[in-house]
Image 1 (cartoon, rainbow, N blue to C red):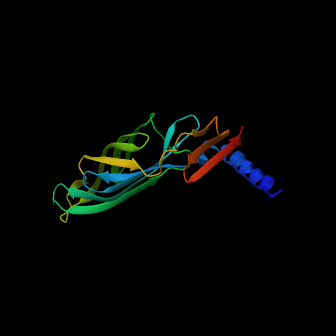
Image 2: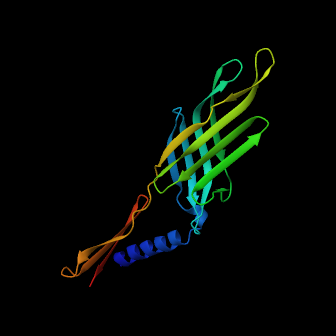
Image 3: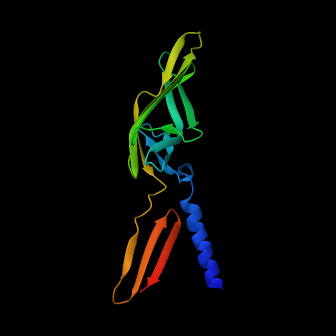
Length: 182
């Protein structure tokens, strides 16, 4: 009886996990650094269609230098998209966000385990004597690695002589093991 109860719980978990919408899929999190040693992170989700969507971007400790008075500023930028997220062109990101108070450009390519690209962040500011100036990071590169690893493909073990087949599938931190006797 107990064995049937455990099997039914396992099968229920498989049905629930298999029926989750694409937006509920585990995020692909990439973390790394820019060429100025600022921290950068992305959360990307893969839809059932295979399309990647950018859900959030975080850039910490950006150093901006102002053109007229050579002052330096430190900034942090965090952006998050509701719903499905910002559409990406395949595995390429080309993001340009501008308003009267700031401009951000981020581009890059996202692979299965690594990502890399470039960024530029600028803000307008007045000097002490009231002159307009631009404060910017200048163009810089970034490299990130995926910190939430890709699931490993299923692998079969066992031999015909033993009469047992074991299939193990690792999905995130959950390992599913199925054993079948012949």
